[in-house]
Length: 535
Image 1: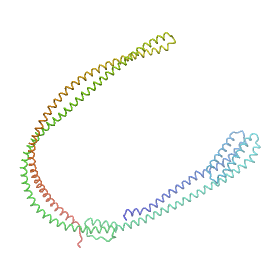
Image 2: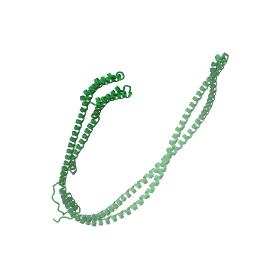
Image 3: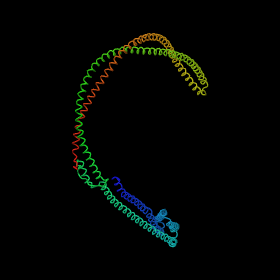
Image 4: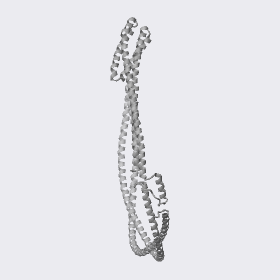
Protein backbone atom coordinates (compact mmCIF):
# COMPACT_ATOMS: atom_id res chain seq x y z
CA UNK A 1 0.00 0.00 0.00
CA UNK A 2 1.34 3.47 -0.90
CA UNK A 3 2.24 6.05 1.74
CA UNK A 4 -0.54 8.34 0.51
CA UNK A 5 -3.17 5.63 1.01
CA UNK A 6 -1.77 4.81 4.46
CA UNK A 7 -2.03 8.45 5.54
CA UNK A 8 -5.54 8.75 4.10
CA UNK A 9 -6.68 5.57 5.86
CA UNK A 10 -4.98 6.69 9.09
CA UNK A 11 -6.86 9.96 9.26
CA UNK A 12 -10.11 9.03 7.49
CA UNK A 13 -11.61 7.21 10.51
CA UNK A 14 -10.71 9.84 13.10
CA UNK A 15 -11.83 12.68 10.85
CA UNK A 16 -15.09 10.85 10.19
CA UNK A 17 -15.75 10.50 13.93
CA UNK A 18 -14.90 14.16 14.50
CA UNK A 19 -17.21 15.14 11.66
CA UNK A 20 -20.02 13.04 13.13
CA UNK A 21 -19.41 14.62 16.54
CA UNK A 22 -19.53 18.13 15.08
CA UNK A 23 -22.68 17.39 13.09
CA UNK A 24 -24.34 15.85 16.14
CA UNK A 25 -23.34 18.86 18.25
CA UNK A 26 -24.82 21.21 15.66
CA UNK A 27 -28.00 19.12 15.54
CA UNK A 28 -28.21 19.13 19.35
CA UNK A 29 -27.72 22.90 19.48
CA UNK A 30 -30.51 23.30 16.95
CA UNK A 31 -32.88 21.08 18.92
CA UNK A 32 -32.07 22.72 22.28
CA UNK A 33 -32.37 26.17 20.72
CA UNK A 34 -35.75 25.27 19.21
CA UNK A 35 -36.92 23.92 22.61
CA UNK A 36 -35.84 27.06 24.46
CA UNK A 37 -37.44 29.26 21.81
CA UNK A 38 -40.72 27.39 22.22
CA UNK A 39 -40.41 27.66 25.99
CA UNK A 40 -39.75 31.40 25.77
CA UNK A 41 -42.24 32.19 23.01
CA UNK A 42 -45.05 29.78 23.92
CA UNK A 43 -45.06 28.40 27.44
CA UNK A 44 -43.70 31.54 29.10
CA UNK A 45 -46.12 33.78 27.17
CA UNK A 46 -48.98 31.48 28.18
CA UNK A 47 -47.93 31.68 31.84
CA UNK A 48 -47.64 35.47 31.60
CA UNK A 49 -51.12 35.65 30.02
CA UNK A 50 -52.64 33.60 32.88
CA UNK A 51 -50.90 35.80 35.48
CA UNK A 52 -52.07 38.94 33.66
CA UNK A 53 -55.68 37.63 33.60
CA UNK A 54 -55.49 37.07 37.35
CA UNK A 55 -54.19 40.62 37.88
CA UNK A 56 -56.75 42.16 35.52
CA UNK A 57 -59.54 40.22 37.26
CA UNK A 58 -58.49 41.74 40.58
CA UNK A 59 -58.20 45.15 38.89
CA UNK A 60 -61.73 44.75 37.50
CA UNK A 61 -63.14 44.01 40.97
CA UNK A 62 -61.32 46.99 42.48
CA UNK A 63 -62.49 49.31 39.67
CA UNK A 64 -66.09 48.11 40.17
CA UNK A 65 -65.90 48.89 43.87
CA UNK A 66 -64.56 52.37 43.04
CA UNK A 67 -67.55 52.89 40.75
CA UNK A 68 -69.90 51.86 43.58
CA UNK A 69 -68.20 54.32 45.93
CA UNK A 70 -68.30 57.21 43.42
CA UNK A 71 -70.69 56.48 40.51
CA UNK A 72 -70.28 59.98 39.08
CA UNK A 73 -66.48 59.69 38.65
CA UNK A 74 -65.70 58.82 34.98
CA UNK A 75 -62.19 57.62 35.83
CA UNK A 76 -63.60 54.62 37.66
CA UNK A 77 -65.68 53.64 34.65
CA UNK A 78 -62.63 54.03 32.34
CA UNK A 79 -60.46 51.88 34.61
CA UNK A 80 -63.21 49.26 34.75
CA UNK A 81 -63.53 49.12 30.92
CA UNK A 82 -59.75 49.04 30.48
CA UNK A 83 -59.32 46.17 32.95
CA UNK A 84 -62.07 44.17 31.22
CA UNK A 85 -60.56 44.76 27.76
CA UNK A 86 -57.07 43.77 28.94
CA UNK A 87 -58.49 40.63 30.58
CA UNK A 88 -60.13 39.54 27.31
CA UNK A 89 -56.95 40.27 25.30
CA UNK A 90 -54.94 38.07 27.66
CA UNK A 91 -57.62 35.39 27.47
CA UNK A 92 -57.55 35.47 23.66
CA UNK A 93 -53.73 35.19 23.65
CA UNK A 94 -53.86 32.28 26.10
CA UNK A 95 -56.43 30.45 23.97
CA UNK A 96 -54.22 30.81 20.87
CA UNK A 97 -51.21 29.33 22.74
CA UNK A 98 -52.94 26.63 24.82
CA UNK A 99 -52.97 22.92 24.06
CA UNK A 100 -55.93 20.56 24.13
CA UNK A 101 -55.60 20.00 27.88
CA UNK A 102 -55.84 23.72 28.67
CA UNK A 103 -58.64 24.50 26.21
CA UNK A 104 -61.42 23.23 28.52
CA UNK A 105 -60.23 25.32 31.47
CA UNK A 106 -59.90 28.42 29.29
CA UNK A 107 -63.37 27.78 27.86
CA UNK A 108 -64.78 27.76 31.43
CA UNK A 109 -62.92 30.99 32.18
CA UNK A 110 -64.34 32.63 29.04
CA UNK A 111 -67.92 31.58 29.85
CA UNK A 112 -67.68 32.74 33.47
CA UNK A 113 -65.87 35.97 32.51
CA UNK A 114 -68.63 36.84 30.03
CA UNK A 115 -71.23 36.14 32.74
CA UNK A 116 -69.23 38.30 35.14
CA UNK A 117 -69.03 41.10 32.55
CA UNK A 118 -72.81 41.13 32.25
CA UNK A 119 -73.14 41.32 36.06
CA UNK A 120 -70.56 44.10 36.21
CA UNK A 121 -72.47 46.05 33.55
CA UNK A 122 -75.73 45.68 35.50
CA UNK A 123 -74.10 46.58 38.83
CA UNK A 124 -72.34 49.63 37.34
CA UNK A 125 -75.57 50.87 35.75
CA UNK A 126 -77.56 50.65 39.00
CA UNK A 127 -74.76 52.11 41.16
CA UNK A 128 -76.04 55.64 40.72
CA UNK A 129 -79.72 54.80 41.34
CA UNK A 130 -79.60 52.08 43.99
CA UNK A 131 -76.18 51.65 45.58
CA UNK A 132 -77.41 49.23 48.25
CA UNK A 133 -78.83 46.80 45.70
CA UNK A 134 -75.71 47.14 43.60
CA UNK A 135 -73.45 46.26 46.54
CA UNK A 136 -75.72 43.36 47.43
CA UNK A 137 -75.45 41.91 43.93
CA UNK A 138 -71.71 42.52 44.06
CA UNK A 139 -71.33 40.47 47.23
CA UNK A 140 -73.79 37.71 46.36
CA UNK A 141 -73.21 37.21 42.62
CA UNK A 142 -70.08 38.92 41.26
CA UNK A 143 -67.68 38.07 44.08
CA UNK A 144 -68.48 34.29 44.16
CA UNK A 145 -68.22 34.17 40.35
CA UNK A 146 -64.82 35.89 40.45
CA UNK A 147 -63.64 33.45 43.09
CA UNK A 148 -64.49 30.57 40.75
CA UNK A 149 -62.62 32.28 37.89
CA UNK A 150 -59.69 33.03 40.20
CA UNK A 151 -59.50 29.40 41.36
CA UNK A 152 -59.47 28.22 37.74
CA UNK A 153 -56.75 30.76 36.90
CA UNK A 154 -54.65 29.65 39.88
CA UNK A 155 -54.92 26.00 38.84
CA UNK A 156 -54.16 26.86 35.20
CA UNK A 157 -51.15 28.92 36.32
CA UNK A 158 -49.82 26.03 38.38
CA UNK A 159 -50.36 23.66 35.47
CA UNK A 160 -48.57 26.02 33.06
CA UNK A 161 -45.67 26.51 35.49
CA UNK A 162 -45.39 22.75 36.00
CA UNK A 163 -45.40 22.21 32.21
CA UNK A 164 -42.63 24.80 31.80
CA UNK A 165 -40.60 23.16 34.59
CA UNK A 166 -40.99 19.74 32.96
CA UNK A 167 -39.96 21.19 29.59
CA UNK A 168 -36.83 22.75 31.10
CA UNK A 169 -35.96 19.42 32.71
CA UNK A 170 -36.40 17.63 29.35
CA UNK A 171 -34.19 20.17 27.59
CA UNK A 172 -31.53 19.85 30.29
CA UNK A 173 -31.63 16.03 29.99
CA UNK A 174 -31.36 16.24 26.20
CA UNK A 175 -28.45 18.66 26.47
CA UNK A 176 -26.64 16.36 28.91
CA UNK A 177 -27.26 13.37 26.62
CA UNK A 178 -25.88 15.14 23.56
CA UNK A 179 -22.87 16.36 25.55
CA UNK A 180 -22.06 12.80 26.63
CA UNK A 181 -22.48 11.46 23.07
CA UNK A 182 -20.33 14.23 21.52
CA UNK A 183 -17.63 13.79 24.17
CA UNK A 184 -17.63 10.03 23.56
CA UNK A 185 -17.29 10.53 19.81
CA UNK A 186 -14.48 13.06 20.28
CA UNK A 187 -12.64 10.69 22.65
CA UNK A 188 -13.10 7.84 20.16
CA UNK A 189 -11.75 10.07 17.39
CA UNK A 190 -8.67 10.93 19.48
CA UNK A 191 -8.04 7.26 20.29
CA UNK A 192 -8.49 6.29 16.64
CA UNK A 193 -6.09 9.06 15.59
CA UNK A 194 -3.47 7.78 18.04
CA UNK A 195 -3.91 4.21 16.81
CA UNK A 196 -3.80 5.41 13.19
CA UNK A 197 -0.56 7.31 13.79
CA UNK A 198 1.00 4.25 15.44
CA UNK A 199 -0.15 2.04 12.55
CA UNK A 200 1.14 4.55 10.00
CA UNK A 201 4.57 4.76 11.70
CA UNK A 202 4.77 0.97 11.77
CA UNK A 203 3.88 0.81 8.05
CA UNK A 204 6.39 3.57 7.25
CA UNK A 205 9.11 1.70 9.12
CA UNK A 206 8.27 -1.47 7.21
CA UNK A 207 8.24 0.40 3.86
CA UNK A 208 11.62 2.07 4.49
CA UNK A 209 13.24 -1.02 6.00
CA UNK A 210 15.24 1.11 8.46
CA UNK A 211 15.22 4.39 10.31
CA UNK A 212 14.78 7.32 7.87
CA UNK A 213 18.02 8.97 9.09
CA UNK A 214 20.01 5.76 8.54
CA UNK A 215 18.48 5.36 5.07
CA UNK A 216 19.40 8.97 4.20
CA UNK A 217 23.04 8.45 5.29
CA UNK A 218 23.38 5.33 3.12
CA UNK A 219 21.79 7.15 0.15
CA UNK A 220 24.28 10.05 0.51
CA UNK A 221 27.24 7.63 0.57
CA UNK A 222 26.00 5.77 -2.53
CA UNK A 223 25.45 9.10 -4.30
CA UNK A 224 29.06 10.07 -3.43
CA UNK A 225 30.32 6.91 -5.20
CA UNK A 226 30.99 4.71 -2.17
CA UNK A 227 29.69 1.47 -3.65
CA UNK A 228 31.73 -0.65 -1.21
CA UNK A 229 29.66 0.19 1.89
CA UNK A 230 27.72 -2.59 3.62
CA UNK A 231 23.93 -2.20 3.43
CA UNK A 232 22.00 -3.97 6.24
CA UNK A 233 19.38 -6.56 5.40
CA UNK A 234 15.79 -5.36 5.06
CA UNK A 235 12.36 -6.63 3.91
CA UNK A 236 12.28 -7.45 0.18
CA UNK A 237 9.95 -4.60 -0.88
CA UNK A 238 11.42 -1.90 1.39
CA UNK A 239 13.41 1.19 0.40
CA UNK A 240 16.55 -0.21 2.07
CA UNK A 241 16.30 -3.39 -0.05
CA UNK A 242 15.90 -1.22 -3.17
CA UNK A 243 19.00 0.71 -2.07
CA UNK A 244 20.95 -2.57 -1.97
CA UNK A 245 19.74 -3.50 -5.45
CA UNK A 246 20.74 -0.05 -6.73
CA UNK A 247 24.23 -0.48 -5.20
CA UNK A 248 24.64 -3.84 -6.94
CA UNK A 249 23.45 -2.44 -10.29
CA UNK A 250 25.75 0.60 -10.07
CA UNK A 251 28.72 -1.66 -9.25
CA UNK A 252 28.07 -3.83 -12.31
CA UNK A 253 27.64 -0.72 -14.49
CA UNK A 254 30.89 0.88 -13.29
CA UNK A 255 32.84 -2.33 -13.97
CA UNK A 256 31.38 -2.57 -17.49
CA UNK A 257 32.26 1.09 -18.17
CA UNK A 258 35.89 0.51 -17.17
CA UNK A 259 36.22 -2.54 -19.45
CA UNK A 260 34.47 -1.07 -22.49
CA UNK A 261 36.22 2.33 -22.29
CA UNK A 262 39.63 0.62 -22.67
CA UNK A 263 38.45 -1.26 -25.76
CA UNK A 264 36.94 1.89 -27.30
CA UNK A 265 40.19 3.81 -26.78
CA UNK A 266 42.18 1.17 -28.75
CA UNK A 267 39.69 1.05 -31.66
CA UNK A 268 39.44 4.86 -31.96
CA UNK A 269 43.26 5.11 -32.35
CA UNK A 270 43.22 2.58 -35.23
CA UNK A 271 40.37 4.38 -37.02
CA UNK A 272 42.18 7.72 -36.72
CA UNK A 273 45.29 6.32 -38.51
CA UNK A 274 43.24 4.86 -41.39
CA UNK A 275 41.18 8.03 -41.89
CA UNK A 276 44.30 10.19 -42.21
CA UNK A 277 45.49 8.34 -45.38
CA UNK A 278 41.99 8.37 -46.88
CA UNK A 279 41.73 12.14 -46.32
CA UNK A 280 44.90 12.79 -48.41
CA UNK A 281 43.63 10.73 -51.40
CA UNK A 282 40.23 12.44 -51.38
CA UNK A 283 41.91 15.86 -51.32
CA UNK A 284 43.90 15.11 -54.55
CA UNK A 285 40.76 13.79 -56.27
CA UNK A 286 38.83 16.93 -55.34
CA UNK A 287 41.50 19.20 -56.89
CA UNK A 288 41.41 17.32 -60.25
CA UNK A 289 37.63 17.44 -60.45
CA UNK A 290 37.66 21.18 -59.70
CA UNK A 291 39.92 21.89 -62.71
CA UNK A 292 37.68 19.85 -65.06
CA UNK A 293 34.57 21.59 -63.73
CA UNK A 294 36.11 25.02 -64.45
CA UNK A 295 36.72 24.17 -68.15
CA UNK A 296 33.25 22.75 -68.68
CA UNK A 297 31.73 25.74 -66.91
CA UNK A 298 33.35 28.16 -69.39
CA UNK A 299 31.94 26.14 -72.32
CA UNK A 300 28.51 26.11 -70.72
CA UNK A 301 28.60 29.88 -70.18
CA UNK A 302 29.32 30.52 -73.89
CA UNK A 303 26.49 28.26 -75.05
CA UNK A 304 24.15 29.86 -72.53
CA UNK A 305 24.96 33.35 -73.84
CA UNK A 306 24.02 32.26 -77.38
CA UNK A 307 20.84 30.57 -76.11
CA UNK A 308 19.90 33.64 -74.07
CA UNK A 309 20.28 35.88 -77.13
CA UNK A 310 18.01 33.57 -79.13
CA UNK A 311 15.53 33.49 -76.28
CA UNK A 312 15.55 37.28 -76.15
CA UNK A 313 14.75 37.49 -79.87
CA UNK A 314 12.03 34.86 -79.50
CA UNK A 315 10.63 36.66 -76.47
CA UNK A 316 10.51 39.95 -78.38
CA UNK A 317 8.62 38.26 -81.22
CA UNK A 318 6.24 36.64 -78.74
CA UNK A 319 5.73 40.00 -77.01
CA UNK A 320 4.89 41.55 -80.38
CA UNK A 321 2.37 38.77 -81.06
CA UNK A 322 0.95 39.20 -77.57
CA UNK A 323 0.54 42.92 -78.03
CA UNK A 324 -1.01 42.44 -81.47
CA UNK A 325 -3.38 39.86 -79.98
CA UNK A 326 -4.30 42.28 -77.21
CA UNK A 327 -4.78 44.98 -79.86
CA UNK A 328 -7.14 42.72 -81.82
CA UNK A 329 -9.06 41.95 -78.64
CA UNK A 330 -9.22 45.63 -77.78
CA UNK A 331 -10.40 46.48 -81.31
CA UNK A 332 -13.09 43.77 -81.15
CA UNK A 333 -14.19 45.09 -77.78
CA UNK A 334 -14.16 48.66 -79.12
CA UNK A 335 -16.24 47.57 -82.12
CA UNK A 336 -18.72 45.82 -79.85
CA UNK A 337 -18.73 48.87 -77.58
CA UNK A 338 -19.48 51.17 -80.50
CA UNK A 339 -22.33 48.87 -81.54
CA UNK A 340 -23.66 49.00 -77.98
CA UNK A 341 -23.33 52.79 -77.99
CA UNK A 342 -25.23 53.00 -81.27
CA UNK A 343 -27.94 50.66 -79.96
CA UNK A 344 -28.23 52.55 -76.69
CA UNK A 345 -28.31 55.86 -78.58
CA UNK A 346 -31.25 54.49 -80.59
CA UNK A 347 -32.94 53.44 -77.35
CA UNK A 348 -32.39 56.90 -75.89
CA UNK A 349 -33.87 58.47 -79.04
CA UNK A 350 -36.95 56.28 -78.70
CA UNK A 351 -37.26 57.27 -75.04
CA UNK A 352 -36.91 60.95 -75.93
CA UNK A 353 -39.60 60.61 -78.61
CA UNK A 354 -41.83 58.89 -76.05
CA UNK A 355 -41.15 61.74 -73.60
CA UNK A 356 -42.02 64.25 -76.35
CA UNK A 357 -45.35 62.48 -76.92
CA UNK A 358 -46.11 62.29 -73.19
CA UNK A 359 -45.23 65.96 -72.68
CA UNK A 360 -47.70 66.84 -75.46
CA UNK A 361 -50.40 64.87 -73.62
CA UNK A 362 -49.54 66.66 -70.40
CA UNK A 363 -49.80 70.01 -72.23
CA UNK A 364 -53.29 69.06 -73.44
CA UNK A 365 -54.33 68.13 -69.90
CA UNK A 366 -52.94 71.44 -68.61
CA UNK A 367 -55.00 73.30 -71.25
CA UNK A 368 -58.12 71.50 -70.08
CA UNK A 369 -57.31 72.41 -66.44
CA UNK A 370 -56.77 76.07 -67.46
CA UNK A 371 -60.13 76.15 -69.26
CA UNK A 372 -61.86 74.62 -66.23
CA UNK A 373 -60.18 77.20 -63.95
CA UNK A 374 -61.36 80.07 -66.19
CA UNK A 375 -64.90 78.71 -66.25
CA UNK A 376 -64.80 78.26 -62.47
CA UNK A 377 -63.60 81.85 -62.05
CA UNK A 378 -66.49 83.13 -64.19
CA UNK A 379 -68.96 81.03 -62.25
CA UNK A 380 -67.53 82.33 -58.97
CA UNK A 381 -67.90 85.94 -60.17
CA UNK A 382 -71.48 85.31 -61.21
CA UNK A 383 -72.19 83.66 -57.86
CA UNK A 384 -70.67 86.62 -56.02
CA UNK A 385 -72.84 89.03 -58.02
CA UNK A 386 -75.97 87.01 -57.25
CA UNK A 387 -75.02 86.82 -53.56
CA UNK A 388 -74.55 90.59 -53.46
CA UNK A 389 -78.01 91.03 -54.90
CA UNK A 390 -79.47 88.72 -52.25
CA UNK A 391 -78.16 90.97 -49.46
CA UNK A 392 -77.84 89.49 -45.97
CA UNK A 393 -79.27 86.16 -47.07
CA UNK A 394 -76.51 85.68 -49.61
CA UNK A 395 -73.58 86.83 -47.47
CA UNK A 396 -72.46 83.28 -46.59
CA UNK A 397 -72.76 82.20 -50.18
CA UNK A 398 -70.72 85.26 -51.21
CA UNK A 399 -67.88 84.13 -48.94
CA UNK A 400 -67.94 80.67 -50.50
CA UNK A 401 -68.03 82.15 -54.00
CA UNK A 402 -65.05 84.36 -53.16
CA UNK A 403 -63.06 81.35 -51.92
CA UNK A 404 -63.95 79.42 -55.08
CA UNK A 405 -62.79 82.38 -57.18
CA UNK A 406 -59.48 82.55 -55.32
CA UNK A 407 -59.02 78.82 -55.77
CA UNK A 408 -59.69 79.19 -59.50
CA UNK A 409 -57.13 82.00 -59.73
CA UNK A 410 -54.47 79.89 -57.94
CA UNK A 411 -55.29 77.02 -60.27
CA UNK A 412 -54.83 79.30 -63.27
CA UNK A 413 -51.47 80.55 -61.96
CA UNK A 414 -50.30 76.96 -61.27
CA UNK A 415 -51.43 75.95 -64.75
CA UNK A 416 -49.33 78.75 -66.22
CA UNK A 417 -46.28 77.61 -64.28
CA UNK A 418 -46.84 74.03 -65.47
CA UNK A 419 -47.11 75.24 -69.10
CA UNK A 420 -43.82 77.13 -68.74
CA UNK A 421 -42.08 74.12 -67.20
CA UNK A 422 -43.44 71.74 -69.86
CA UNK A 423 -42.27 74.10 -72.62
CA UNK A 424 -38.76 74.07 -71.14
CA UNK A 425 -38.84 70.27 -70.88
CA UNK A 426 -39.96 69.91 -74.52
CA UNK A 427 -37.17 72.21 -75.66
CA UNK A 428 -34.59 70.14 -73.68
CA UNK A 429 -35.97 66.92 -75.17
CA UNK A 430 -35.59 68.31 -78.72
CA UNK A 431 -31.99 69.36 -78.04
CA UNK A 432 -31.16 65.94 -76.54
CA UNK A 433 -32.70 64.16 -79.51
CA UNK A 434 -30.68 66.27 -81.94
CA UNK A 435 -27.46 65.55 -79.96
CA UNK A 436 -28.17 61.81 -79.96
CA UNK A 437 -28.58 61.84 -83.76
CA UNK A 438 -25.20 63.60 -84.17
CA UNK A 439 -23.63 61.08 -81.77
CA UNK A 440 -24.98 58.15 -83.80
CA UNK A 441 -23.34 59.52 -86.97
CA UNK A 442 -19.99 59.91 -85.15
CA UNK A 443 -20.22 56.36 -83.81
CA UNK A 444 -20.77 55.01 -87.32
CA UNK A 445 -17.65 56.82 -88.56
CA UNK A 446 -15.51 55.58 -85.65
CA UNK A 447 -16.69 52.01 -86.23
CA UNK A 448 -15.33 52.13 -89.82
CA UNK A 449 -11.92 53.33 -88.63
CA UNK A 450 -11.78 50.57 -85.99
CA UNK A 451 -12.48 47.87 -88.62
CA UNK A 452 -9.66 49.23 -90.85
CA UNK A 453 -7.22 49.23 -87.89
CA UNK A 454 -8.12 45.62 -87.04
CA UNK A 455 -7.30 44.50 -90.62
CA UNK A 456 -3.83 46.10 -90.43
CA UNK A 457 -3.04 44.52 -87.04
CA UNK A 458 -4.07 41.05 -88.30
CA UNK A 459 -1.60 41.35 -91.22
CA UNK A 460 1.16 42.34 -88.75
CA UNK A 461 0.29 39.35 -86.52
CA UNK A 462 0.64 36.94 -89.49
CA UNK A 463 4.17 38.27 -90.21
CA UNK A 464 5.14 37.89 -86.52
CA UNK A 465 4.02 34.25 -86.53
CA UNK A 466 6.32 33.46 -89.51
CA UNK A 467 9.30 35.15 -87.78
CA UNK A 468 8.54 33.31 -84.52
CA UNK A 469 8.69 29.92 -86.27
CA UNK A 470 12.15 30.57 -87.73
CA UNK A 471 13.60 32.01 -84.51
CA UNK A 472 12.17 29.09 -82.50
CA UNK A 473 14.02 26.58 -84.68
CA UNK A 474 17.33 28.40 -84.10
CA UNK A 475 16.73 28.65 -80.34
CA UNK A 476 15.81 24.95 -80.17
CA UNK A 477 19.10 23.90 -81.79
CA UNK A 478 21.14 26.14 -79.47
CA UNK A 479 19.11 24.88 -76.50
CA UNK A 480 20.02 21.26 -77.26
CA UNK A 481 23.71 22.19 -77.26
CA UNK A 482 23.24 24.08 -74.00
CA UNK A 483 21.44 21.13 -72.40
CA UNK A 484 24.25 18.79 -73.36
CA UNK A 485 26.84 21.18 -71.89
CA UNK A 486 24.73 21.59 -68.75
CA UNK A 487 24.42 17.82 -68.33
CA UNK A 488 28.19 17.45 -68.58
CA UNK A 489 28.73 20.34 -66.18
CA UNK A 490 26.10 18.93 -63.82
CA UNK A 491 27.76 15.53 -63.81
CA UNK A 492 31.17 17.04 -63.09
CA UNK A 493 29.65 19.32 -60.44
CA UNK A 494 28.01 16.34 -58.77
CA UNK A 495 31.33 14.50 -58.76
CA UNK A 496 33.01 17.58 -57.29
CA UNK A 497 30.27 17.93 -54.68
CA UNK A 498 30.54 14.27 -53.75
CA UNK A 499 34.31 14.61 -53.42
CA UNK A 500 33.87 17.73 -51.29
CA UNK A 501 31.19 16.05 -49.18
CA UNK A 502 33.41 13.02 -48.69
CA UNK A 503 36.25 15.31 -47.65
CA UNK A 504 33.98 17.18 -45.21
CA UNK A 505 32.49 13.94 -43.90
CA UNK A 506 35.95 12.47 -43.39
CA UNK A 507 37.08 15.64 -41.57
CA UNK A 508 33.99 15.42 -39.38
CA UNK A 509 34.69 11.75 -38.83
CA UNK A 510 38.26 12.52 -37.70
CA UNK A 511 36.89 15.27 -35.44
CA UNK A 512 34.31 12.85 -34.05
CA UNK A 513 37.06 10.30 -33.43
CA UNK A 514 38.99 12.94 -31.48
CA UNK A 515 35.87 13.85 -29.51
CA UNK A 516 35.19 10.17 -28.90
CA UNK A 517 38.66 9.78 -27.46
CA UNK A 518 38.01 12.76 -25.20
CA UNK A 519 34.64 11.32 -24.14
CA UNK A 520 36.27 7.97 -23.42
CA UNK A 521 38.81 9.73 -21.20
CA UNK A 522 36.03 11.66 -19.46
CA UNK A 523 34.00 8.47 -19.06
CA UNK A 524 36.94 6.69 -17.47
CA UNK A 525 37.41 9.60 -15.07
CA UNK A 526 33.69 9.61 -14.22
CA UNK A 527 33.68 5.86 -13.65
CA UNK A 528 36.81 6.21 -11.54
CA UNK A 529 34.87 8.17 -8.86
CA UNK A 530 33.01 4.97 -7.92
CA UNK A 531 34.82 3.12 -5.14
CA UNK A 532 34.22 -0.58 -5.81
CA UNK A 533 34.62 -3.47 -3.43
CA UNK A 534 37.83 -5.54 -3.79
CA UNK A 535 36.09 -8.90 -3.68
